[in-house]
Image: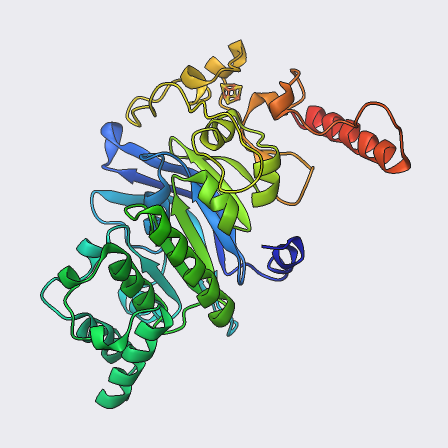
Amino acid sequence: MSAARSAATRDGEPLLDVRGLCADYGAGPGAVHAVMDADLMLHRGEVLGLAGESGSGKSTLAYAITRLLRAPGIITAGSVRYHSGSGQSIDLLAADEHQLRVLRWSQISVVMQSAMNALNPVISIGSQLTDVLRAHVPGMSKAGRRARAAELLTMVGITTDRLGSYPHELSGGMRQRVMIAMAVALQPEVVIMDEPTTALDVVTQREILQELAELRERLGFAVLFITHDLSLLIEIADSIAVMYAGRLVERAEAAALFRAPRHPYSLGLLSSFPPLHGPRRPMTGIPGSPPDLRNLPAGCAFHPRCSYVMDRCRTDLPPLLELTEGPGRQAACWLQDGSAPAPAELALPVPPAGRVTAAGQLQAGAARLDQVNLRSRS
Ligand code: SF4
């Protein structure tokens, strides 16, 4: 995605504005805090990636936003506002079941993780597509629904002779395409995709991502794309939020995160996958396992696995610091508050040595100002 387009998507009010969202599993002292104090904004036409290992809270956050969280999951704090293109502003956490039913599919839709589990195995895919239209487009004729179902299948690259097929008669990639066709059937403004390509081989994965990009270009919806594969997000997302142990730990434009991650966890995720493009990076991965959410380490939850851990990390929880090196650039790491020198791979930009140009001096000044600003905020 070009920088110009990326900047353009940030104009105006966000489609989804999530503030301080918290979600638990269970209640009382044994409650598991799966999402803590999450702030997210999804803009019109944007692809926002949400990355993190399994159990980091990505899916819980998405289901909390869409009010699809099932017991024992509960939302304990925060707000989620949806600003539609028609000028409506809806508080999703206060919406009743009727309002949610109207919103789902038509304005906000979800592509679930496992297409085989999400599709009904005993109903043909044609009937499942027409069911969506019958439920949400009153007055549409049977022939109209059938024609629209055929059009949707064609849009995702499946021939219409498959309308009568059952899910088990389709490949994994085709089932996932059917899920995408259902999600865009009513031309929503927001599509939330929860690991939509995880179970697929890389060739099918690539084809589906290409088709998704074309559909988005044509229909203009915004996407919240959830995956553990940060290198895939770098390819398709405008901006990326990284989650660890229920908290957002870094936010950045995708290209900026790829060039220079500012949180050791993001750096670890990037070094866990071979990049699809660009220079090779050594694959080192992240030592250890994600923490038990019922018993999080004190201070920074990442400290037992972090190669840059300092004394302070073991006791103090780092806030999400504004890094001032780009729009919305944030990281929750004590290396970024200016009180300790950050290692080169996580440091804020410094001017190149040698030839000094006016631009270089400006950059140097800006970098120094950034450091001063961060120190004064800490
Ligand atoms: Fe590592 Fe400390 Fe930063 Fe946490 S706050 S990511 S432990 S350096």
